[in-house]
Image 1 (cartoon, helix red, strand yellow):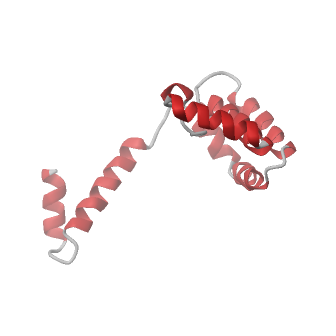
Image 2: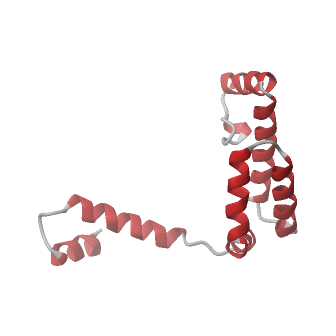
Length: 123
């Protein structure tokens, strides 16, 4: 529920999320942190600086699992910044890879490369 866009949640989920965040301070903190991260995923100016501020905010929070996430972001900082700021996407390539793997699993053990090639070209 925390990861879903608020306007996509049903009324009962809004109520449950409100109860959870009211009962547990860590849940409140987590909901705020995730909402702030989601705002970074929307293209705009200053995303790189916003990411740095978000990482500092998360490290100040008492949520150890998110600390390991921020360490991963820091390790691959250039790729994360590029993903958040550049208009390019490898989505189409990943879609082709997924389709090819699905076809290969469907015909696994029944034929060789010739049939796989034929199925991919027809698909």
